[in-house]
Image (cartoon, rainbow over all chains, first blue to last red; front, side, top):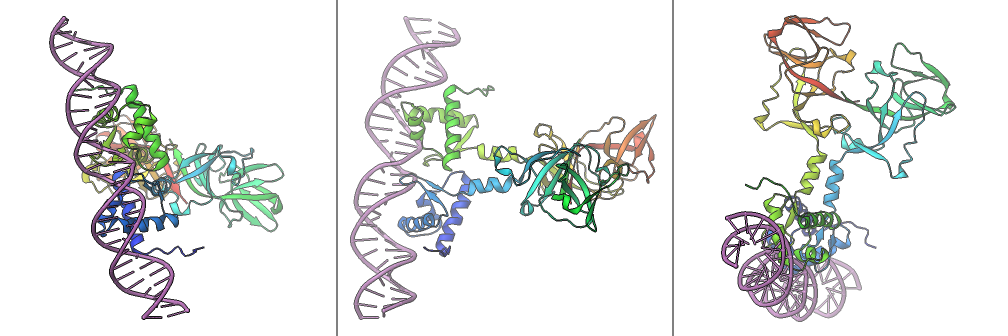
Length: 215
Length: 215
DNA sequence: GTGCCATGCGAATATATGTTCGGTAGAACT
DNA sequence: AGTTCTACCGAACATATATTCGCATGGCAC
């Protein structure tokens, strides 16, 4: 009914104060504290604005409870800090793996990704796979490495991608070259030969955006 | 004086309750809530145990403040989640870098390391460097990679290590082979030749334990 | 102007919450 | 047995905190 998410200055001020306070103390401020530290003349003003903020969904309050204010800030901070992506399993030449879309299962594992490898703001649609086999050694990816892929169904020439070959129902990590109506899947390993498949028979499952290795 | 970090059942119970409560409400419980929900007969019992828990460092309290309990849990969770190691700079063939011991400077940067790359319990003495140059490509380390090293002054044959050549005051990433009273430093790149230096002229600065790459 | 409404003020009120204190029961030690 | 200590109980107490209510102000539409 009130589609404007507009907050008055005072409301913004109060919200900011609460966030900062929780950050610093690990528990919410009392209404009187808000009042005094913000130089507001009466607690009722704080209550008034708090109610508005609650209606706007900016925070939740537990009636009659001291310091019963809670911003989702804590959870937000956790999420912000936890740069995680779903770990979908192992990629081998041969075995299929679940669609990245099938994340609904709930039992998915997650692994951390440092922002130095993939910036937090580009983590959307990124997932992780563990590499089995040496088909990518010349691209500096070895057996046991964890590769990070961003889901996308198209690729540029030479991109390193995870591709599913529909006819075998298998997924592998290869460099991608479109050649006419065929696709050349080039292992980054001089001892291995490329594979040629009809363009209609491949489906790209994502592009490699990072690698992590434990030794 | 009391070296035993042992907690009584009740103390564990209270601590657990607080954790759960904070998790659920985003603000700490009142003493009376603890008392009632745990079926304790008096608030003073709770206070009594709370004081012990505070002495033990399990939580902090703000005197006279309603719900002024804060568990280090949040920070603990953060720390547990934030597996970080100091980032000491760039390693090139040529330029020296600060001693890993000189962490006291305070202005050190830190980067996250997922437990999949280096387990949290083995993070001691680990630091990170950014690689400049291609001297290690055959070891699957490329320009721009972040390598994780555990500080150690000795190495096994063939270990990949960061070594300082004292006479030039330079540090590089190489495979290490001791040959008599000399040391062979072997780039993992067939196009580059090994370096031989007297054993007394090298100082090992750490062994590579992980690699992270952004693409 | 008149009325309406968002916003703010101040004080009174109710109660939620932390603190303190005197006392008890049992375990451990002398 | 006497002493001491830990852990607990119950109740009184002090105050920190939220709530409510009547009233003031200023903008704005009519």
